[in-house]
Length: 417
Image (cartoon, rainbow, N blue to C red; front, side, top):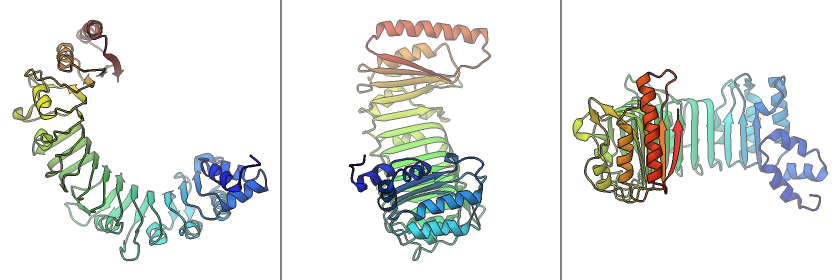
């Protein structure tokens, strides 16, 4: 190590995950201390890395001293748990000292009073901003402009719908936006979040407290919606969407226009939609490679999807995941027709309530996949089972053993909850 250039040592120390370990390393010798001071570009502070008996004031001092001993920090991560509430002054000092060179900031610090991160870091070279447990008010796009920002993540953040719209508009190069447990402040009884970005490629929205989301994004490729209860979701785009993931979402009306033609991945679970019909939204995605319908129940008998429909609509499908759903005597994804799923190599099938018909359904699905390589069976096992349930499970086990003997080339796996 003593023969390594000081720049290389600084690079190595920048890959250490905990700032506390970097502080220890800087005490090894003068050369390492110089490397930490002049060539360290990344620091990560986490309250879990320090003794639990450290006071808030001691933590402030340690972080301040460590940051002020560096020159040219590019990546700074500070995550302090809720037991500590910092003064605003030292936090502002950290941001002012590093903001000219900073490219990535991950910030989860509770302060009194609240620190306006946008004001301190705006008009700089920041490319990645990850905010947690913060309040954003009074966004001024002309002053708080993030001309280089490509990724923005807001978690447990309170912000008005207008300020969020202005913040996204203040990021002309943004490509990735993540909104997680967002408290959106609105003056209307019907809260609406409107976002416009012609550079955005990925949106993740989870537990966002609004009734309507209107997204104008010409180049969106990835849309991930989770734990939402919406009256309206509208996507205005130019058909660039490739990945659509929806989990635990209830929406009255969903309009994604012509954005589904180039879909490659559709992953839908625990989803409720009133209009339009779910399948009609994705039926034009002839390039679809992966399809997952899990816990999705079609209320309209006319929209129940069978294996024939899937085979004809998605000829390039490689990965298919379906859960066995039987409602009102109607089987979703039934074995209608004879068209094979020619390209499917991975098949995932599962149940929430086991039925005597599950085994034959599995067999029928396998028969329709001549090039199958992997089969994954998902099941839910309740702690208290009736005699009938135990018999069905035993019968299914015997059925699978026979199945594995016939299809020896298929790798079978089981995942039970």
